[in-house]
Length: 205
Image 1: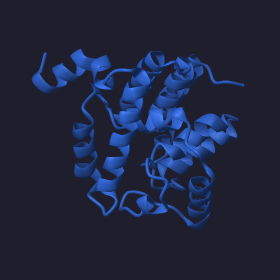
Image 2: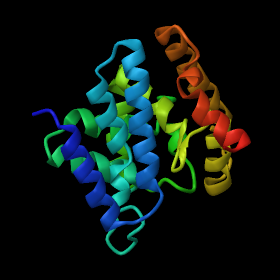
Image 3: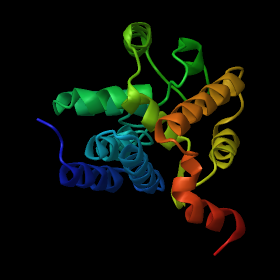
Image 4: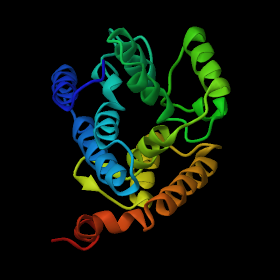
């Protein structure tokens, strides 16, 4: 059964109760951005919203080091699979892999065991990304807790927190390619959909 917006919002609120932090507002921004872009380019706005809202749901357990079994992408995948929402489980994995390359996993902030590694390797080898995979990758790269920003700002935020690796620039190039794809699909620069919000972020209210 398709997850409703209300169910998704309640699940995110539960996740935030388990592990309070700005990640939940980042997810809310991503959900809102995904819905806005989806409406413009003819995709299912509800599916886009729910997918954006829950793409990082695995963070509910991510920083609980006593209980944590894996990185947030795997915790989200496991949680949504257990709940019978394979489409969202897929987003929990795909949003972190703009490049379908297992080498992008090799960083200081992703932890996985052999079982996790086999899972993501098979996923990357077998998957063909659809517009919802790409859309949430894009919105993850546009979204901060306080709102939609230029991708460059979000990229710098991630690098400052998590470091710069060998695959950082190729991943940046890939996400700019995704933005170009949605610019064409929407018939407009997607930044124009958030013009006032981005302008306020850059220059202040």
